Length: 307
Image (cartoon, rainbow, N blue to C red; front, side, top):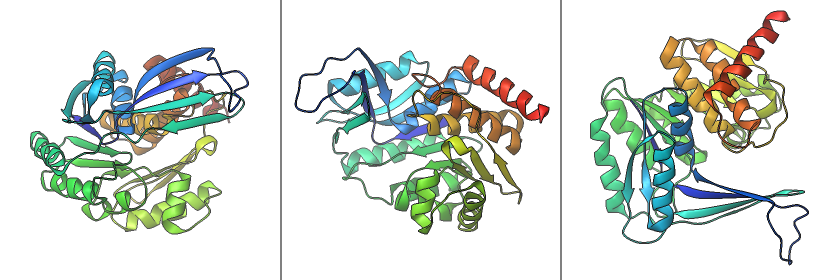
């Protein structure tokens, strides 16, 4: 079972506004509401790809109830902890001449709620997977992912971490199965400017030496690089297509990689499926469907075989 954790769940409201002007009343041409948060995104894509997954985290207020409803409607089992006060944040994304985001701060997560989440890790056992994704509220210490990874490692649970800075670094000593920084995140950790796949490979190896078993660096339109525990480095370009919605593409890549690796145990195959899932997201309005991912993968591999 793949258990995902999202500390900062959100209700994402995406509005398309033609020629949005500050200081004026603007009317949306279209609007959509999604359950947001990196772990939730990973679970939604995993469920779409046929994997057994359960989404955990914290919800509060009427917005939290809607987040949980939407996640269940996507076919994902849930294990959310309901907070006694506050409300799950609302993120507003305005798509116009330029894209603007306004992210809410959300509810504080008290120590007792964090303790309850940690207790729920007892249900996980050897061979299960724990995905720690995204940021944490200001009320939660940055050691939390490291603490959870340590508990999981003792139980033989494979840990996947997709986070920034100290949150990610604190996981590395516990030998996570996979970490997935993007170009900017790994560059900030090492104080480097990641311009090419070769640059990404260099720093992925450094991160692997710090404890991660496998390091997947997403590079947007430049593809991705994977430094594996077997000593190999795989580099792949990205499929060609028109980018419509990059939000969730990295989470889709993570889910695509996990699902493919659990199916075949093949790192090169998992990397390619991950890239195609990420691209299927970027080329659509929402997270990718299985059909869209399969179609892009088929075209991608056929194109590669022609070269």
